[in-house]
Image (cartoon, rainbow, N blue to C red; front, side, top):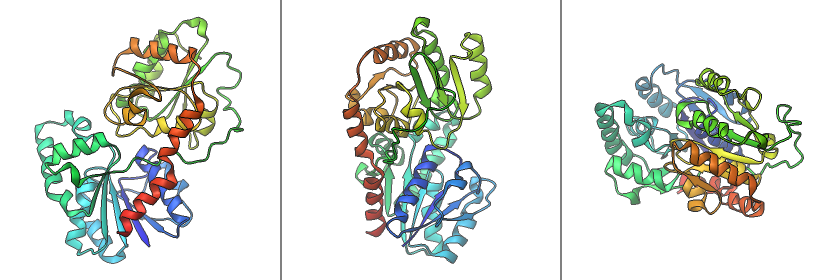
Length: 360
């Protein structure tokens, strides 16, 4: 079986990384993958399975992707396609219909679109809703990576909730290395290590996390590590300087393998305004790291079972976040329970669910 994975690019986002991991897992079952990219750029290009092919549609803008995609489907005829992230999730089934494509068409959404695009204006909202209403039914399966996203998509598109299938992200990779060396930046620090992982962009609210961290007692001797890269680096560096947190808040950049960072941290914190799922929460749980998260729409509360596996605090509340961090650092967490919960999102389980959809 040949499966084509249609993505904008392979920059290191959550959706991009999980598809690379799925391709690697499928390869063990004899399934070949082709990454069909609007633009073949991104750090993850260097981390694809050796058997995976890359197809560059060379579409400068999203609206230019339809023609090259139709041509690709006519020529390559893969057994199935998976398209992720709107608007590719409407272009892909439309291209498949126009190309006379006979294989399985699966689309998957990884973000609560009504929130992600709410500031783009009424016309954009109307176009998004109309495109979903027309093109979603052209797909064989519509996947949402959380129940909250399924609810959001049903509301936006006007389709029945029953027309969406929820498959959580395969965020537990089973590659925990308890003996991994401590990253040099964390080595020798006397107090607790607080970690977050994510692109440095506004929705992740790293500014809120830094503000919450500044409220912790200095006697705690804690270090905050923000692992990731993105457009807000300069702004965050200025905030760190303004609050006098130099040397206590670290911005090491992007890490291909964040495992050693999880393995040598005492607490993981997610401070986002919204998430589609929250892969990094599962990644931290797999290492038994206690969790504090904003109760943001839509993924964290599903992963943490409404607070059973970690603390949930109101979105945008630096004081509540600071208090929850302090409480979590003084409590003894149940590592075994966290690791067991992470297994619900194991890649072998999720990969098999997708294969069942592909083969139906």
